[in-house]
Structure formats: structure tokens, C-alpha cells
Length: 149
Image 1 (tube, rainbow, N blue to C red):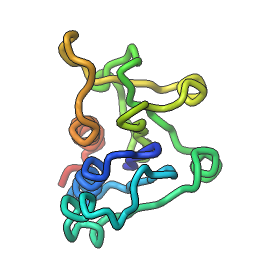
Image 2: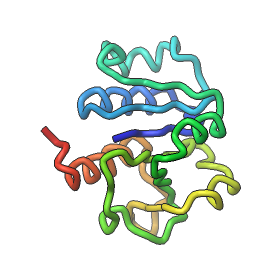
Image 3: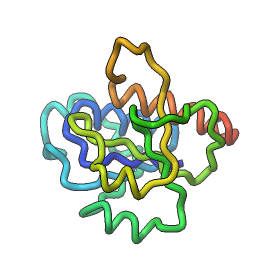
């Protein structure tokens, strides 16, 4: 199972997702540019020693990532989707794509991707924290594929 972060811009969230990936044995893909340096003290404080247990793959841009993983199914998590994540049948090698905390993914990318899902939330609220969203969706995808051990 793969988690793809599109140009992440909050170091603490990215660090929390990397810790989650280490604990759940998920591959992490970072689509550059990140909005911070991986030596940022805020990043290091949250990630602690989990970098050594993580499988992180960095990509210069989305097109480079797409060329390398074109045979994989990319599932965009977005508040703009109509389909709910818990009604979707995840596959073992899905690439779960999460947009920037500040701006999501560009409209062009939205249009390019077929599979778009959302987490249902209270209509009075805008969105969940990205690290929480990753945890919710990754847990369901792993559960469906019997990958939780």
C-alpha cells in the first residue's frame, strides 16, 4: 500500500504521516517540492526516529511520479469527491494520493484522475487534518486487503 503526498507544506503533518507509515508498513511518496526542508526542527520533533523505519520515495514532480507508477491505480482523496471511501474496494497496491494541506491538488490533476474519494464529515466543517485522513483511509484499505498484522 502506498501513500502519496502532493507537495506537502506542513512539516508536522508530514512527519506524523511518516510515523504512521512506519508503524503500518506503508510506502510513502513525496511529490516535490515540499513546503519545508526535511531538516526542519518541527518535522524532526514529530518524526523522531521513525525515518529509519520508513520507506520514503521522493519524486521531483507529479509527471515523473506518474511515469514511474503508471500501471498502479491512483486514488485521490478529496473533499470534492462524490464517492465515499468506505464504499470503495481498495487494492493492495493502490496509490492513495493526498493533496497539499493549503490547496489540495490542481484542477488539472483532479480532471486526470478517475478514482476520487472522500471521508464523510459534518457539513458545518471544511476538512479533517491530513494526517488523520491518511490514518482513516489507510486503515480501511489495509483492513479490506487483510494487511493489518
